[in-house]
Image (cartoon, rainbow, N blue to C red):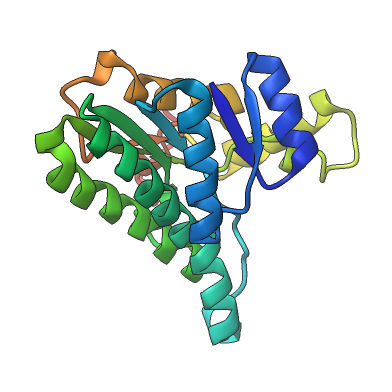
Length: 231
């Protein structure tokens, strides 16, 4: 396994945890994405599975956004994944062994998300990209799918709440419950990793061009009050 990250220490830490090879790359650059994927291909002796996870939300009202912010966020949240797909696709198609790519989109790209115009548009683009590549590359045995999470209690968010981890998680879960998430809590990182592994494994060998929504049931929740609490 090879692990690529823009942060050297984080790449090394995750690589050590999974027994993999660490690569430092900023895949907002097409050249850097090619170099990173080429290094992984060489170190691993081939490439068949790619978890394409890039993105960061920048929340602001649409009316306050400017072209520079749109360009920066689209480059981070959409073009970075395009770059990795381009670089990976060269090897997956040339090697002729098939394979799978799993990308991370977001429920923000499925329904309207206030203050997330740029992020939502970029993540909708990721899902559209997956459908197109699934159609173009399916004949070569290459599958492309997405996971679309809702807000997940990753360290970047829990660390922002200046309390012990268990208290931070309890606070975030209470927020999710108040907002009507059917499972009444936020997701955890491993609950996003599981669907990604599924999409990269042979358990999903007849799935391509799909987006798995992993949101605790939010997308199926009717937003208007129609009666008392259900038990």
